[in-house]
Image 1: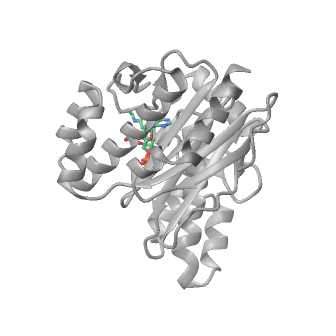
Image 2: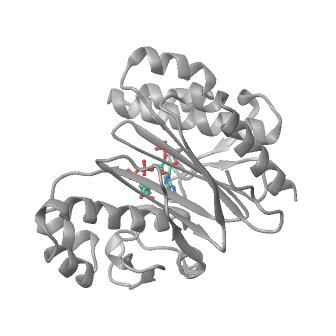
Length: 272
Ligand SMILES: CC(C)(COP(=O)(O)OP(=O)(O)OC[C@H]1O[C@@H](n2cnc3c(N)ncnc32)[C@H](O)[C@@H]1OP(=O)(O)O)[C@@H](O)C(=O)NCCC(=O)NCCS
C-alpha cells in the first residue's frame, strides 16, 4: 500500500459484499442509527436493504475510527439538497476535510474516502447492450456514435463504463442525476460539460460547484472491478489513490490490518 503524502490530498476505496440474506441484515442493523435502521426496515427489496445497511455500517465504522469515538456517536447527515429527506450524500459531523461516497449494485458495496478532496464513486453491474433510448438519454452524440460502432458483445460494458464515469463525477459534485448524464462527455481523461438539459434545475451555487469539480478533477483508475461490473472513481485536485481494498464480508474487511492501516493513514492526512 502506498502511503498518503502529508501535503497532498488522498483517496482510498473499500469494497465489500452485501449478501441478500435477512440474518446478515439483522447482524448489521444494531450498529446503525435509528434513522438508518428505520430506512433499512422501510426498504422493501431485501437485496437493496442489505446493500444500504452494509454501506451505512461501513461508513459509520470508518468514521468512528477516524473520530476516535464509538460507532453510535457518529453523526451522519444524509439530508437531500432537494427535498431534505435523509437519502442524499452522506456528510460526517466533526471531520473537516473528509469526504465520502457510497455506491452499491447487485450485492457489491463500495465506499470511497477522501482527505482534502471531493470524491464520487459508482459501481454498476453490466447488463446487455443498451437500447437506443437509453443511449440517447445518457450519452453525448460522439459517445453514442462510438458505442454504435463497437462490437455488440462489448457494448454493454462500454456503456456501463461511461455511465459510471458520468455518475462518479455527478456524485463528487453532489448533484447526482439531477443533471442528465448526457451533459457529461466522459470519453476523455477529464470530463467536459456540455449544457443540454437538466432533469431538475440547479441553483447557481450548485452549477458553479459542478463546473469547478469537473474542471479540477479527474477519474482515477481502479483495479478491483470484478467481471460483470464496471466502476469509476472521480476525485478533485491531484488526489492519489492510497489503497483499494476488497473483502467479501464487511466484518472481515473492518478487522483486517490493511483496513486499520488505511484508516490510520487517512486520519494522519486529515490531521496534517
Ligand atoms: C446519487 C445517485 C446518482 C445514486 O444513484 P444510484 O446509481 O442508484 O446509486 P449508488 O448506489 O451508486 O449511490 C447511492 C448513494 O449515493 C449517495 N448519494 C445520494 N444522493 C447523492 C448526491 N446528490 N450526490 C452524491 N451522492 C449522493 C448516497 O450515499 C447513496 O447511498 P445510500 O442509498 O446507501 O444512502 C441518484 O440517487 C441521484 O441522482 N440522487 C439525487 C437525485 C435527486 O436529487 N432527486 C431529487 C430529490 S428527491
